[in-house]
Length: 382
Image 1 (cartoon, rainbow, N blue to C red):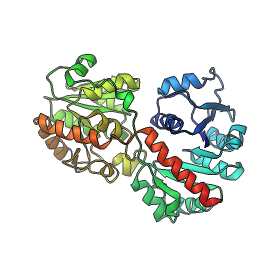
Image 2: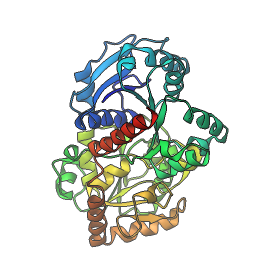
Image 3: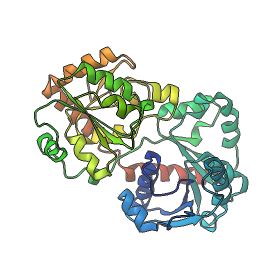
Image 4: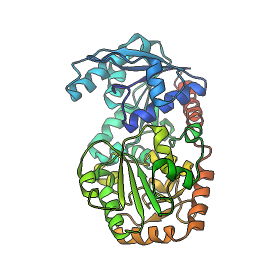
């Protein structure tokens, strides 16, 4: 099967959605598909070739790249719409069996001016977040060239079912991880030495986007209540509100954004890996549903503390493979975290269970499921 994976993102970059997209392009290749990445052309910088992009995202260069020039790139909204119109008409897209995208303008453009069957992937429960969009997605789902949608969670999938989209056109495919990128596995002492962290101090690590929208204000509140613990926040890209509020706290270390290989030791250094226990990124901001870090945290084999939100409960079970706490209750979260840090055996038990549960969630396995779904949908539409 030949897939044209179309995006409006300039590559490479640090954005999590590009990491997920390129991991899936690698997964599709491993699963046997031929993939062409249809992306915007750089206007002012040298065009990165396939090998540069593959090396940045640490995947095999088993794909082709088609760079498409559209509108002036400094106006993001115009560029997104323009790429939605020109990308699906590129010869690389027209030659493919299926056009695959995570981008709404490309989805709409592909159905309007493209020629190939289309698969849309998203983590967003759009009809729930934006109720006015429900009839739009209902209409899209009835287009003869719309094969279906791949959703990152059951929570997202259900929002489209509730909007009237045919359930047979919707596949839940939880994200994944690459086991090789977590090698070599490090003991806590080895990882702390590599990261220059205190060897004996209880350590709580967050790795991901460093913004208040991710709930890091609550994490800093917990750090103030637990001065005996070391809190490590990995992923800073500047001097924002999180960095300013963390600066006076002696037990909080903010680490700049790291390449993947340099981030992994911080995961292994932790006693507890934390997803800030708030539902704001899910309910208020809407830009985080079953965050990607969940899969890396589980694969690292360290105890996880997270909010008992509906998306996370699809993978995490309180007392079995994680410690789940009531969202937006800093006192309850702090008490549970203190209990974990005082019980190394419980931390190890939860971490080992999480690692066991995530073993099958690799990118190639996810790609295989999606390819089967695409093939079934193609056969049903013939």
